[in-house]
Image (tube, rainbow, N blue to C red; front, side, top):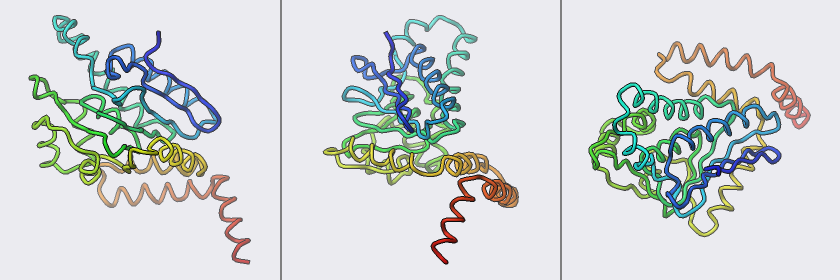
Length: 253
């Protein structure tokens, strides 16, 4: 029995976490299924947007602690391999050629919060909550901190990672963790509308924007501007840009 549902209909590749009895906790099998679904979406030429949601009251409770407890004696090599598989999942979302959108209801905790933060867009219901409970059980949010640090300041990140306190959606939005927050009533409708609108945009323009935005992380301003100039030149050669310029020219005529 699969732990996610994956479906590609038209321009939208939908991935739904489907382990509500475990609050969609992440285990090795779910990581493998998510990576496979992401690869399928990347290979499907008609898909323009990847949309990750979840069944049940919570988006994702983080790593499956039962699984981690059962493997406590596995040894450092196996621990490292397991951690690297989770890191590869996050990296795969960030490097995915198509925009990846997370729709969060309920709680997104630890690795589940990391799953959302790895996405290009995070949409949240007003009642959603986010947090990193790892330190509270003597563990470290080691992998997810690289994602959190990119969206919020150092002092804020330290507090979030060490306090183990839950953050309300509006506060998470102010911290830069989220893209938009919608009222609980009609959240699904609002999220679907956002995804549909993005799917109508130029696929080549969105892909180039995503690649360029993440490539300039850590660059000097000179290097980033040079890469931007290259991206500008490449974008001008795409068919979507040619058609867009032509339509604009007709309106001006």
